[in-house]
Figure (spheres, rainbow, N blue to C red):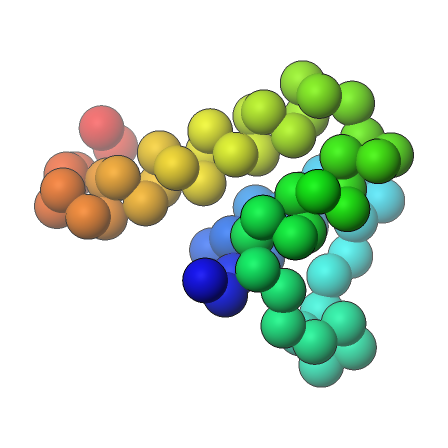
Length: 67
């Protein structure tokens, strides 16, 4: 599964992370998280994963954005 624009935005909120599709190509979420986990602590990775899953569930279940 490729990263959505929202996923790219969320990951780019991490300090010192600047992903660009044109420069870095396409990444799967799992590959990217694995690579990031080598230099970012577990807490940051967990927060990013949880936010991405939360955003996806809100969209999939048609919940209000402020849920």
